Image (cartoon, rainbow, N blue to C red; front, side, top):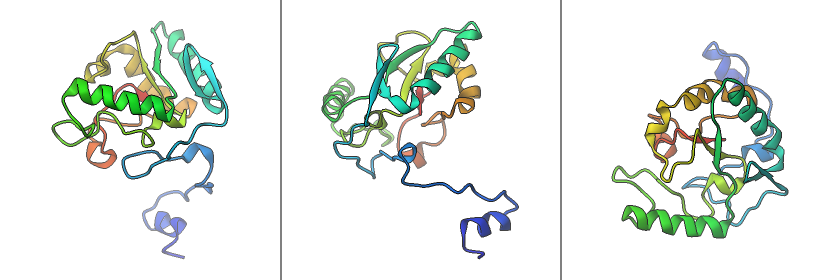
Amino acid sequence: DPDSPAGRAAALGLPEPPDIDINSWEYILANADNSIAEYAPPELVTLEGQLVDSRIADALAAMAADTRAQGLSVYLSSGYRSYADQAANFLRVCRNNGVSDGKDSQGYYITMPAGHSEHQTGLCCDITDIYYPTKNRSIENTAMFQYMNAHCQEFGFILRFPDGMEPITGVMYEPFHFR
């Protein structure tokens, strides 16, 4: 069928797409257009002081260990946030940035409302080389980011909000947010 995913891929000379269950836990989507309401992961564990969904803990620990094995510092700074925690975070970030809608001057989110944040899924973590009171684009200049960005997929992670993709994601570039 030329209109099927496999047919469209073949027409473009691409490999057949994998057969996946789009409703599987790892594909949960939280963004401005898709609320996950008061969802909470079934089991949270603490990894280096951050709560994460237990199903990503081993991979996240392995990614951090691999990065450290390169002689680089790794700091897990923000994992799971409950609906209530995200509501408080949203208000704090808005107040600190002089906005009410969570968006920057270009209209991209700098923080998501409760029920719309990937942090509520427990499937992501903000990762830097040291503690930063405010995380920003300068993190992309660290050796840790360069290494982790090049190797995160080996552990099943992606840089979720890459540079240049703001019009698609609706979120400002975050060189620290790995999912």
